Length: 264
Image (cartoon, rainbow, N blue to C red):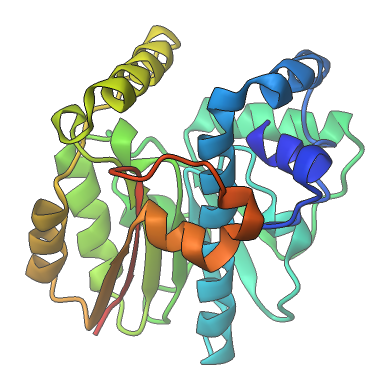
């Protein structure tokens, strides 16, 4: 919904996604106007657009150096597989089984044809290993891959997060981009109250936030996995790179982070 509003309200200035509106059901479409009118949604909407752009730019660079496997972890309603411009690149969408069934129903109802380069892999991150889930799809773990892991980490246990990062780090020349959130106490009171409200809303829908990280803790986690390259990009840096005039008036301070890392 945030990506769809970004297309209509801001012309896809940061990130163009022609499928964002098409993939939504009638109930979601009915809520877009209210979301667009709610000024408190702007910061998150722009971040979501920017994190997709950041990831897909990193992905394009990875493909340019020879990577031919893209894994979208916790794909949800992500649409990259429908827009994939990279010839010879296979996209593996990995997600919770019920969520994946729902997405495939949405695509069918929207009349969207599945590209031949797309492979679905149902997996429950908390009960199955990523290695086993990917092996069933034909994924080659002896070849490098690009892993896009957006909007997932806060909802997983630290054990599931570290297990996934260990898997990525174990595939030479692979790259991963993911986002994470800082602990509530890192935010000033007004921002903290808003963030807690968002967390409570997601928990009420059965998806509580389980893992939040201080930036030094995240750095230690990545360094322990011995990634060859690692960068932690703050919301402020994303705004400077991508927002342009859309960033005017946005409150600075703590916020979500994007991590990009390349395995040895």
